[in-house]
Every structure is written in structure tokens, then in C-alpha cells.
Image (cartoon, rainbow, N blue to C red):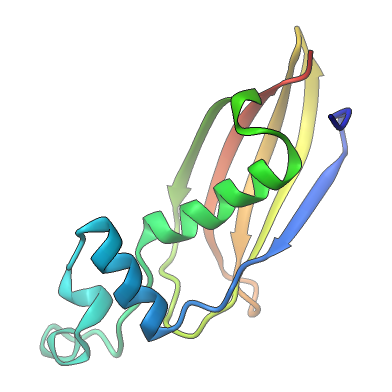
Length: 129
């Protein structure tokens, strides 16, 4: 198991979120909100195109964590959504250890689009023993 030290970081290039990925996620999750799958419905309410489910983006960030450490070492994980992820976007997921104390590593997490837009910010706490 990797040792986690303050300042350690990891990045993951998330797969492109295509219309097919959105449709598959909607089917698997049961979330059929039209803003994620129906371009005409988006246009009707003034949105130029469909956009990704926030939970799909959160799942990519979770994958970053489980690529780093086994899932059973993740003590807490949460995110705050700050912008939408447009269709056909690729995101960079990053995590940085901010401190290690009392057997826990505290991480800051971010999902960023190629233009620098931050779509998610979050945290995780990982056991280090």
C-alpha cells in the first residue's frame, strides 16, 4: 500500500463524457433528467446542450481515489459542484494530500476542464495505518 505524505498528489485524465456515456449512465442510474439526455428539452429551457450528471463526474473522482488506495481505506469522501461538465468534455481529476495526522491523510480533490473551469471541489480522508 502506498505511503501518503503531505504534498503527495495524483492525477487522472477522466474519459470523455460523450452522449453515449450520458445515455448509458442515465440507464444505469435511473436518472433520466432531460438536461442530461434530450437536446430539444435543453433548448426549450434555454440550455444550449445536454451536460453531464454531477454524480458521473463524482464517480470519476472516486476512481482517482480507488486507483490510489483500496476502497476500504477511504474513511470519508464528499464534493461540492461548482460548474457543469459539457458533453464531449474531458476532465482532469486531481487529489493532493494536505496533511497527515492521527492515522488519517486529508486530501483536497478537484475536477477541472481543459479551459481551467473547476467543476467539482471536494475532500477525502484516507486511513494510513
